[in-house]
Length: 118
Length: 108
Image: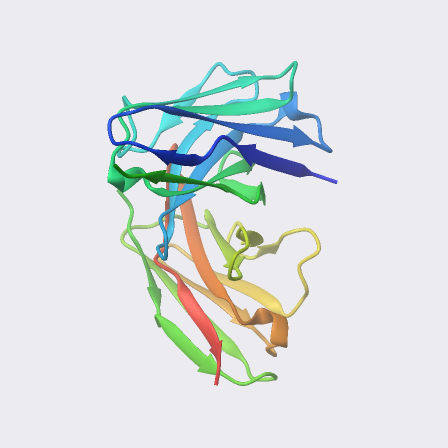
C-alpha cells in the first residue's frame, strides 16, 4: 500500500535552515507529482509546494517563495523540502502528499513537526 | 487568490443525523473542488474530488455536490467515526491550491 514517511523535523532557531525528507513506497514514485502541505498548530491547511514527477516543474506558495526549495531523487523514492530563513510563522506540521490529477492530494504522510523558536 | 469560505464553523449533530457542510468560493472554480476529513492527531484524508467523485474506499454516505461558487458535502447518516474536521480545497488556477478554513462536525 502507499506509504509516505516524513522525517527531519525538529526545533530550529529563527533564521536557520532545515531539510525535510519524505520516503515513498508502495507505488511508482517516479511517475507521480508530489506536494508539501503544512498545518500550523490548531490551524487549517496551507499548500507549500509541488514538484512534477520528473522534477522539471516546481511551484511554491507565496509565503515560502524564495525561501523553500522542493526537490526529489527518484532513484531513492524520496522527496525533499529545503527550508531557509525560517521564521516563527513556519512552525507547523509538514505533510508529504501525493498529487492526484494535478489538482488534489490523494495520499498523505503522517507529517513531521517543525518548530521555529529561539 | 481564490478564497474558500466554509460554513458553519461548527456543526453539532447526533449519530444517524444528516450533515450538510457548505463551501463557497470567491469566484468560480468550475468543479475543481475537493473535500478532506481530518481526525485529531491524524493526517487529512481525501473524500471527494471534482466536486462529486468519491475517492477510493470512501463510503457512499459521503456525497459531494455543486459547481461554480457553491458546493456542499452531505453525510447522509452520521456514523461515530465521522465526527471530525472537514476541509474543502480548490485548484481552478494552477498552481494556486487553496483550502477553506474548515468545519468541525461534533457530537451533540
